[in-house]
Length: 139
Image 1 (tube, rainbow, N blue to C red):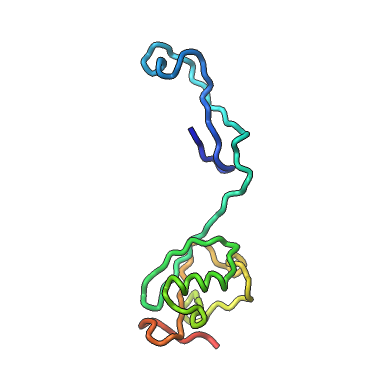
Image 2: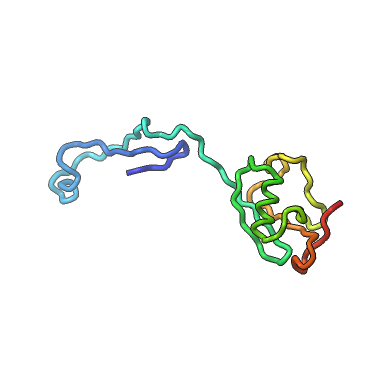
């Protein structure tokens, strides 16, 4: 069977010690139980991708949960959040407190902005009719 370790997937094989495992289950033979051995040849060499979940409150009051990589650029995340909310990204900004919008340099990764998994961001829109909680975008 396959086993997930912190390094990746590995095949786990039980060493054979005589008759088949079917015979052992029927009580015909009671082999000594040994710990499984890991096959190191099947370990993946790629590092696992770690995603963080950011919650985005839309101007209409709904909440989006977006799974993103910490290395994603802030402007790409803003575009993704605005598209999920059905708003044009040019008329949107993101805020942590509904008052001051975040405005990092273009291409800045989310991890350098100071965002962590589980953070709640507010999508602010200057587009008319986008919801009752909409505020004007910063200058």
